[in-house]
Image 1 (cartoon, rainbow, N blue to C red):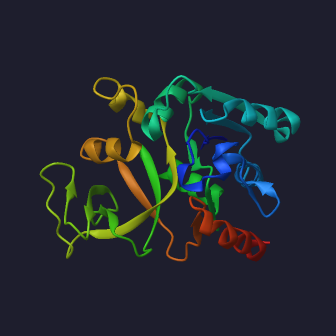
Image 2: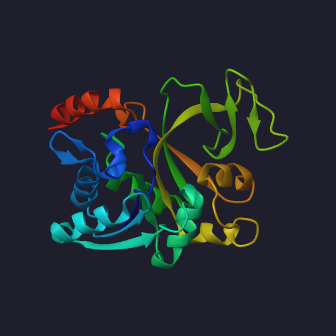
Length: 244
């Protein structure tokens, strides 16, 4: 099974740690967060991983080499010339994927069963399946009664996406995105014309959700931590201790 890890970000919210290292190599409970994600994927049966790099890219390449790629096949998608955001990063790496692949942020830790998510996607026939949960937030993805993505809302401002979308809370399910999704190569055809260079995968999903089949995978008991800020590092270490 194949997967992609986003490790190209600048990690600005983790300064000053990221002044000298990429965010993906910031240690959590004694190991770089990238290692935690690789090990979780490997344990779930993923044996081929693409990792995109930009900020201190060579440090990530050297880290993987020093660890013999953790005994699996790892490819580097080089974004050192320009950061392409999540959507552009996936499109650049698309030649590696002739079968469904799981996408995972390097700074996400969770209790989700990645193999179960992947298997659900395969059985569904979706173009993409998004891990979501009822976590309290301000910005929600919205799904119809068939669990298909139909829009997005900012509850504070009532801004909605895509253009013209009508927020109807009585008939739409509100979920927070978990930073993990599974994509089939059938999705790439929707990226061919208008989507080039740097773009967000979420913007792409919301603009194409009427055509592409994008479905939720809701985990009501999802425990997830985004190691995006300095104050979450200690919480992440406690999270890892609890998971083991």
